[in-house]
Amino acid sequence: MILGYFFDVFFAIGKISILIFFALIFLDFLLIYNNSKKVLIAVRDTPKRLSNGDDNQIKLSVLSNFTIPIDIKVIDEIPHQFQVRDFEIIDKLKPKQEKNYQYNLHPVVRGEYSYGKLNVFVKTKLGFISKRFIFSENAQVPVYPSFITMRKYELLAISNKLSEAGIKKIRRISNNREFEEIREYVKGDDFKTINWKATARRMRFMVNQYQDEKSQQVYSIIDMGRTMKMPFDGMSLLDYAINASLVISKIAILKKDKAGILTFSKNIHNVVAANRKSSQMEVILQTLYKQETNFLEANYELLYTTVRRKITKRSLLLLYTNFEGMNSLQRQLEYFRLLSKNHLLVVVFFENTETKKLLLNKANTIEDIYIKTIAEKFSYEKRQIARELKKYGIHSILTEPQNLTVNTINKYLQLKSVGLI
Picture (cartoon, rainbow, N blue to C red):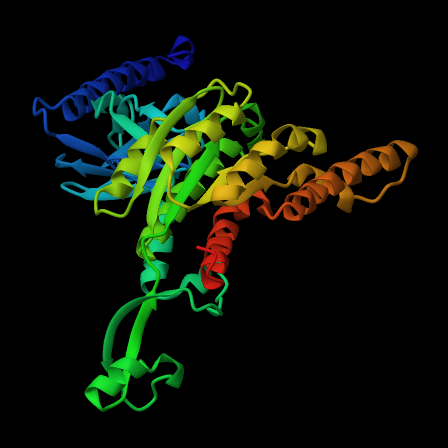
């Protein structure tokens, strides 16, 4: 059109080009704004619940009922907890074609997560007009303690492959077994199990048959006080403890023991009595999911009186807590000693991984030497806490957060192998 001011022929070409341009826009409009409501279908397939601390797979499906090829851009409004602002999928669809997509979400906080809209922007090859299609508005998905990890360990335990997850194979060295029946001797039976009274009555060798003791009580006691607020990889120590409690409860039930839960901070939050009935794991899962705390100072005196009143049978108590130094241990040590008189107490507390990193750094300046010295002091106090607990016959686990589950299972199996539970 500009050249048309100088050459008349270009003015005519410009007018024809504008007419063609608007004709193409109108054609693009007709192709995109089809009257059919089902010209495009998109579905977001989310699990009924997400697993905290694990990768959860989210599936998207887009079906084109257009009779022409289209370009699509999929924008899923992911829950705000993940702070993902740039999620999009760009692709092409042929006529009547369906495509599936998937992505992973890694939550680090329990609770309700709200999805926004599933937006699909569609263009034809002309590309003048884009139309937005909206699907799956305002979906709610709860994030539960790590049931994916629980199922992984469950499958490994059933198939006797726990060693693949770092669980040690521990040989049973005790005779902590309970009587099952008297039966006739067969070749290969241990002579120590011969029942001489039954042998005299029957005039043939009879032996006692034993089975491993079952139905021992295993309680996961979770400190929900301020010391458990410390984060590691975006997840608090409290949530690491909750995830480990879920897994160890499942392992205990698989080993024919009874599993229970007790949570506390300033007050007692929940007590789930130890049991191994089929519905126990769902009760434990729901209880752990609903745990809320203000991270106030933990009341160990109240914990002791509650355990004494509620847990009357000798049990294994796995107490998940944390200590900042020897002084914080000394304040609670008397209650630990009281708990260990009637129960087998295992205190589980955490190594500071940032401190360990500082110890590995090379000190080049006076400031580096000072920082490394302080880090060594904190690391030494953690080890000193473990020795102090051992002095009073209290078992302990000093672990990095990411190894909490494996180390707890190993300790449980070790105590079981020597017949302490």
